[in-house]
Length: 244
Image (cartoon, rainbow, N blue to C red; front, side):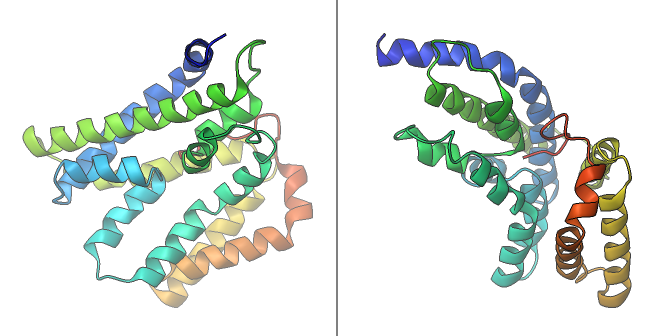
């Protein structure tokens, strides 16, 4: 079998796994593009950021980072906290990414929640190249996000409509993530830790500065209470509703 045939065979095997991601990433990407447009950015910004950052929830938060005064330390800390889970994804994928050749750097760059879930759990059909399968899953998922962001950016710049309240999408998205997490826990330890830590830091540091100390407290609390928290989680599915 030629390399071209192996690639096409893997594409045909990978695409059905990504159809649910197409729906979610398409609409969420469009929302992100419109959100950036509502903040005064041209259509080029959401397209390029999705192409080079591909950070999902981080991209929504980055809009405010781009609008605020330049603070690289805060930007780095927030980005690290939000995307730190990818460190564990990467460790879990070390064996699976072996012997993937030139595809490996892109597989590392494009690793998101959805691509991890598919590539880690999917039963790759016999005769389908594993490296090509994971490559197409990753590329298709990013393509859905990039196209959605571009469409949203163009629509927001050229189609007049009321975008008031669209910034609530971030709140709505994290509420959905919270609900999904609560479904996976027998007892809501992680939700309570997040809620209590956030409220304490909100009172102590104010609305503009509570995020980083709250996330530090959450990480420390989750680490310290790991042996009590893990038994409360439903590990039947690898990951739930988080995006990117």
